[in-house]
Every structure is written in C-alpha cells, then in structure tokens.
Length: 70
Image (cartoon, rainbow, N blue to C red; front, side, top):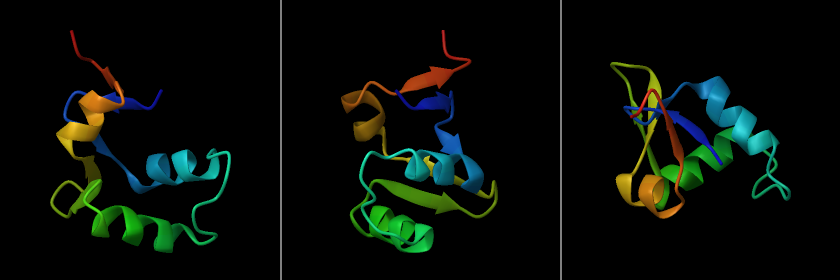
C-alpha cells in the first residue's frame, strides 16, 4: 500500500521512491513517469506546497493508506 498523509500530497522524493519500487518500470526516466501520471490524471503537482496530489478516485479505489487519518 502507498502511505499518504491526510491531504494526499507527496514530495518528489516520496513519489520517486514509489516509482523505484515498481516491479516493472513503466518508463526508465522518472520525469517521463511523472509526466505520464499527470497526463492521464492520476497526479497533479501543487506548486504552492511543492508536492504531488493523487486524485481522490485513486486514493479510495486503491485503498491507499492516509497517515494521520482517523
């Protein structure tokens, strides 16, 4: 499971760790992976927080853990 904070935002290093631990690399380059995830609507980058936000449908659909959630 992917641990997420209550607000579902990940810093770049956390997203990169997820990418590195995938059983098969979707793309060899991390930046291409992020670009693909953004294009298909799974994540968006929040410049103010400098973090990536997962779309709620994926958070609930894949039962991602929210750290700090009750």
